[in-house]
Amino acid sequence: AASSGLRSTMRAAAREEDQGNKEETEEALRFAAVPACFVQFEEGGRPVSAYAGETPLDVGLRSGEVVERSVAFCKEGACYHCEATVSAGGSCLDPPLADGACARLCKYRIAASSDEASTLSVRLFAAADDLADDVPTWAGSTSEVAGA
Image (cartoon, rainbow, N blue to C red; front, top):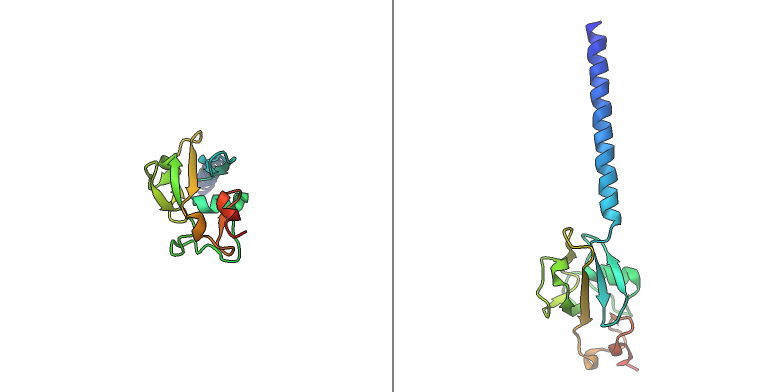
């Protein structure tokens, strides 16, 4: 009889642990579904939801705000095609950047502790004459017509 009481106690403890894990999982899913901030590519562009851990480059590619041509982004910081000026909201990044800083957008991640009302504004840093038809650019940027 004592062993059946022990089994019942162990089952109850396992159910409580499962319920706790379920609540933690649900909380993590709720957190993951809420944007950490927004990213705006080019002045006047539409703000795009950005989630903790994403790079601003990934946000742009996912949303279609960043256009790849025949040369792909390396996503490792070596090609410099994603170099941009941070106009505002550099605190959304991990590590944070000062407004006005130049950065390769593949090298920074959206911070988990970002204020979800914040907007990171970035502008392509490459000069229009440096861009050829095969270089990736931001959608809608004036540099996109440089090769035309």
